[in-house]
Length: 423
Image (cartoon, rainbow, N blue to C red):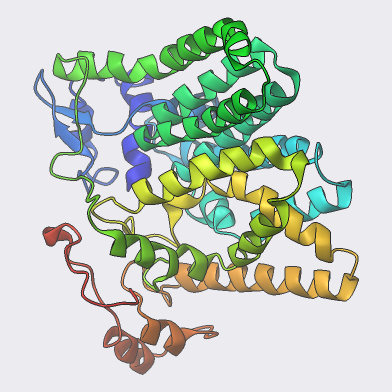
């Protein structure tokens, strides 16, 4: 599981003193039955292909589990029940902390009832719920937290102009990339706001000169918070920069993947998080409202590039997961157009409550379907989706029927099987 690859830093450093080779992995076959996230290290043994940002966020919870283990007569192995519980708690904690921070930013633009509604909907009507509670310790809700923090500081800088806020934003961009390298794309959020502010100035050159400290501290904070990955690469490979994903990579010449990733039934973002259709309407509604100038600039710069890069990955469905997990962090910025839409309908109570409950029920039910393997982890099609839609459980005959309707991705061909429209 990917979560183990991000977490392995902690037992390696604090329990086994074995970050150099990760030899302890060979003595724990149950915890490391799958080693796809490991690569040969420069000193022999292994290195993890994943960056250490997740481990840093998990550290306080790991230590709590570590000290609790002997108290409750569990082994201090890094993988006994107290550790698993602590990491599971960390997943929900960072999701809730991110939502709380996001609510502060939303409160600068919307009424309290709208903010509360959006926070509830993001948690219960999107796959943020699944990755916070059911499949905990994957990176996506942790990056969601970092992106919420970034929005807090970037939006604060946009209204106040204080260099300290822009420096904090730079730290958030660096730390986001420390969790997942592609999350460096969140830098387009402050970049978009910066450009919008620049274009709004009468004396642009003078304003730009006045931003020297902001730009410098942004870059410095970005570099400092990203630096642990270079230190690890140097330690593990002997080189300051390393590409640890082997043959995995991007296909930037396949726009069809973008369509499949957004609207296909294998993992489509708008199929398994359909409340985002309302956010699209909200984007149109907010576009002529001056109060959203900074947020609009962030959306315009970040979302198209993020969608293109994320869905150009060779396995654009991102393995076995509920919905398009790689787009979970983007829910933070999509909260704004979603709030614009619900602000418009919140006065019509019947429409507001019926719409909210529908999307909450659908998301919770489909999360249950995925957990029960009714929704297949990576091979759904239009026909299989319709066949299992609304089903609480499947008989053996229904499972056999569903199997004939699936389209299994060919991982050996690195995502080259793109011959159907709805995948």
